Length: 239
Image (cartoon, rainbow, N blue to C red; front, side, top):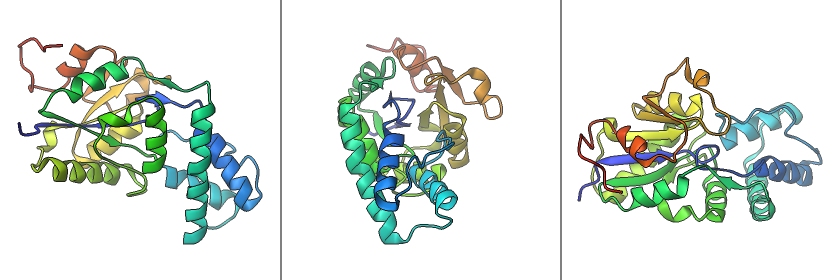
């Protein structure tokens, strides 16, 4: 069956939480390489991609952009430490209903699941692997592809269409995320949006850029499917 729906999932706050493992791993890596402890400071990560966070920290603490080799070394060490932190933390958790929803969606041949995340590809894999979620995603768009979210989403779509062998209409591409930044990026790229009120998100957070659909979380499969406008009309969705 030809893929007619492409779903692009954000990772942090939408699918899972690691309890701050990314912050801890980056601080350790930065201290090892540059001798600056607690580099994170007052950095607010929401909506920022991994490269944007790193560039901002380097500019604030070092007063410059990293050379290519420095950046590679920092990222490599960050991923090594992130793997250790994610494996060890007792703060890791999946968001409500995530496994059940992904299992359901993965069985539908007309739906293709991909990632659209501000994480580096390696980092997203580390986070998903612990929750046994990596198996559901054949590809994605990552901060390894681009610094800005709209272009990350476009990379995900191109990869998905290459795998499926057919283009997906823009109105059938949905970005699922937990922040207004996910919604803005999706709208910028011309895609539809499903926002979830997980990770302390509130309805008011989306006032300036309302999503097409807003759910409490991903635990209600019929409610999620109803968000796929007109694609599953009237008939009961088999669970």
